[in-house]
Length: 262
Image (cartoon, rainbow, N blue to C red; front, top):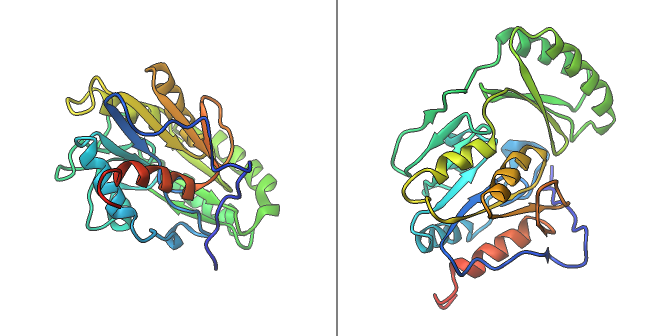
């Protein structure tokens, strides 16, 4: 099973993306599909050599005003970037860690989805070879990257299941995936929470993400006068575009190592 990269949609690696420089910035980064190339399964993503050092340098240059804003749980982010621990939000705003050495706390709106929905979802997805489900406690994900022909019937099955759910369930479109979560928490709210913290307050926000689950973050950053950028394809609310994660990593490395002899 090889690593999968999103192909560039243009001949350039970036469109309308400003260098990280100038006024004080607060940088927010999605992980899968943004910093890291997608893989056939979430467990198979690879952290490229040098990325941890780049993140460490960028965080230092930003005086700590850098946070990962991910659909993954924070414990998984720590494993991907060990030994580095960063400020982070996990599972689409359900979890947050304001300080690298601080606790992971749940946001007030974080709600576990019912076990009955998980049972029904796994039963439905089992009928489609190659498709699989992921349980992140505060969200369930149906992955169909290995079963693209199953997308339509899977979406129909998901729609029927959430119609009978005892709690309100939000459906989000990810890259070859359908993600379910309770309403009330999202990446935009997570970014807003960080911007209220002393180390982030008063800085211009910059957010980079790659799919529809990041659009609440794009909207929040745009409303705060910041710079929202998408990866792979132009997303609603984004003002600039990276061709793929490699372009994001190069952009970040240029800032992180500028003046360091690297």
